[in-house]
Length: 161
Ligand SMILES: [Zn+2]
Image (cartoon, rainbow, N blue to C red; front, side, top):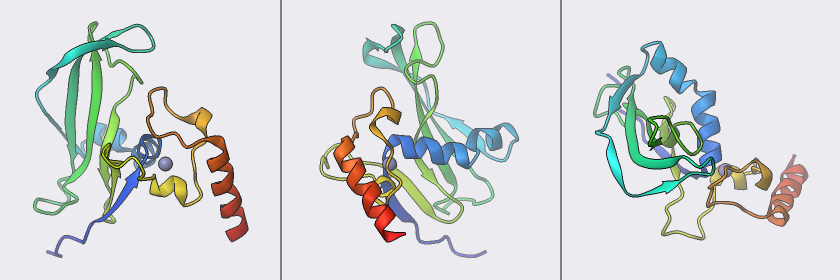
């Protein structure tokens, strides 16, 4: 079998990861049995907190979506790692969705979060010209370049095209 490809890592904001997760139809592929869920045990949050809908978030869910088309140790075996907040009523709280923490494409690109200890790091996809506007950011996003920076990136992208 062909050796696993070299993985190219890209730091990305959560909005871009959500978009890629949806574009790659990860949940649909899991429903069709093309990706396999691998759930971690549900763990209680150390300190439950209310989300913006007033639901109390009490537990964390984490899972991997495995792609058996690329058996381990192929780095593409773990197609995605997802996290979700579980509310006291058992539903998914906060965004109401799975948050993709990392996504590895069949082409060998791994989209990763911006590490919290690198406050100056940027979303490579936003900076490449496809910046997400401040009013389309998620409620709790910590990565939110201001409108002036967005304008600069948009103008730079227009000049290049
Ligand atoms: Zn981005």
